[in-house]
Image (cartoon, rainbow, N blue to C red; front, side, top):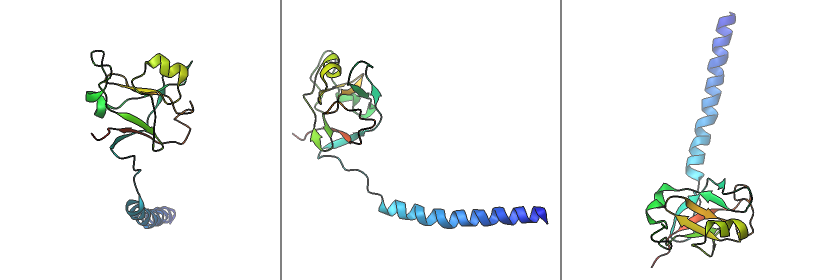
Length: 139
């Protein structure tokens, strides 16, 4: 009787789990609205790491935009503008040390490094609750 009790308990728990899971999954699938960036937005920056412990800069790398990033030969090639909560950051094409020291929205987009930037108020983008988008302006 003990084994039968365990089996029926497991089956009951499994049934309850499925009865709750599937309606919730269907509701989430139909109610989820993905974040929308500014016009021309191509990528939402999600993962950040500190550039240097002594400053305010952060790095976010994205392979998708690597082909249009700045290079040593073309240091102002990237057309990308970073946006913070729908407002453009800048100035762009700054040196990494300048971004790290002064911050205030400065950024760069390098093919190898990715995005090096500072939040508009030099806060930590991992915890400030803002959305950061890479935008390619329309000509």
